[in-house]
Image 1 (cartoon, rainbow, N blue to C red):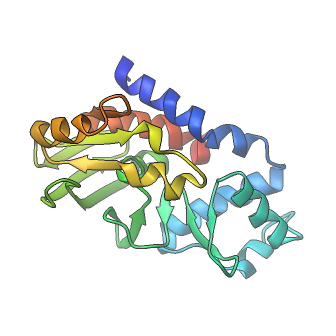
Image 2 (image 1 turned 30 degrees about the vertical axis):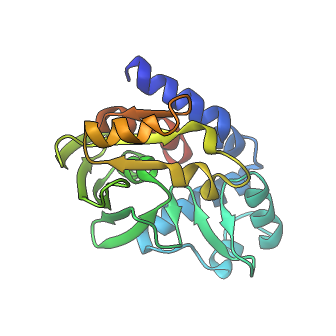
Length: 216
């Protein structure tokens, strides 16, 4: 990981230290959080409450979900059901990811790229340039970046946009930009807060952020 990607990873971890928060959970709850991510990846949706209740050491699903939501490790809807668990979104987003036959939505561009390394699998990302609407396609095989279309693709992050749940603030400003011109124009709107990354850099920072949630 180069210095720019490392700086991005450090910024993201400072805003939402998911791995540290997961490590701070009781063992059964940490395992449950991992089960939520693994189940979502396998099925395309979050596990039902009955599935969580059947996990070892889970006596109170409401308490589990409340803690995970309080720690901004997942998002609950108005009925208290799981609506998102980074990197997965239960709401439709511009970032669609194919994990084999399973189709999911990612919270943001970085989350979409990070699914393959987190899960140790292949992923096909379909999205769009936030500036032009131009189609974006990226193949990721584990931690290795595959074909990108357009080849000039960049990933933009508006670092000053985090407030409340990250899913409703920063995630909406971690996006794909089709080329250097789109990236420059986007950055010019808030030059002190916005940075862009190559797909390789965004993949590296995303992998460093998400892999520990399932694979360490």
